[in-house]
Image (cartoon, rainbow, N blue to C red; front, side, top):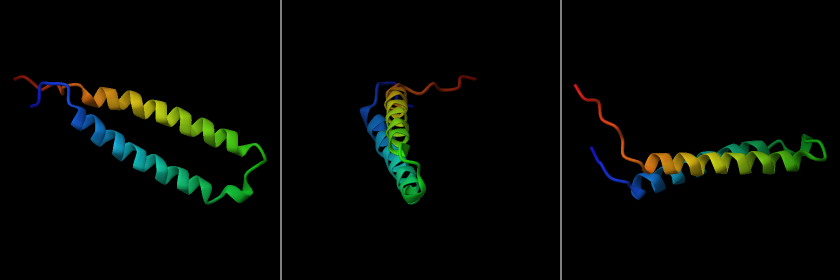
Length: 70
């Protein structure tokens, strides 16, 4: 087990999470033609909240993992 703060783990998680977020945004944009007029602000809100969560979880993934002691 790695007992130190790991930026490698954090950047790995950040990259994977942003790829998933891009895929979700892409799926939402496929149906953009049938949105109401102010639908874009909800998409921006979704992206902002998602990115904030990803950044918080990235910091948590940099922390050392706890090991089970027997």
